[in-house]
Image (cartoon, rainbow, N blue to C red; front, side):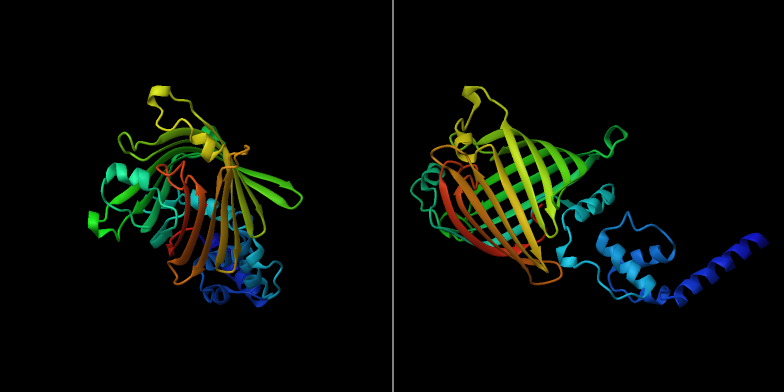
Length: 339
């Protein structure tokens, strides 16, 4: 017992001596950010910083040593992979909802090129508004963590995208289209570097997408999708390639969907301070050059929400419009980051 007391006192003296050299518990307590404060306490206790995101480790080391020098601009740091690490750490917390794709609400969008033909099949004699609301809900949950004892995870995900004729009161403001997308995702962290670019994740997913409608408005397809996440400082890029799982001709609602959606896409995001600029690009890579581009801009409006402006031009914004070109701009709020 006396030996334990002696060791405890010695540890306290060592901690105090460390504080005299530049940092102490008071310095840590003064940090407003919860993660930074915890990182500071860990550093005082001698825990390694390797398991913490670089920004937290840097703050902790500065608090302990009393240094104010900045070794790297936080705005130039990778921003997707640290979030993925945090998601994995919270994967088994049932009180945490983990986002998958962006969660957003655009109360007002305007489409200058509406698909009236599909609308008239459901609402003959009624007009379709060019202004409507659009929103997306997307989340995921861990199914099997550290598959086969390796750093490989199996996730289940669900995304629902909605187009709502909220201002079309003549027909009781119906939902024009709802697309449902459940997925199974095999996620593999990676640490490959090439000319300053960091490949931080590889994914393989089985993805089903359908609009849940009956004929003649029914649309659906199943895909195997391979994706890779690349990061360079504050720029992230996800490259995806997919293969459509064949269906019998009599069951295929949209046999030519590949002609409009292509076989892959690029999705990028550049983060500067509290602003994010993003894009999604795809093309069928054939002579008719059908494709689509989406541009995104988020900006701060509160601690919980970001303002969000979305612009889409091309084919495949929704399944019902996969073979119709859309030209839409919308404004609203975003709850989470794009990927």
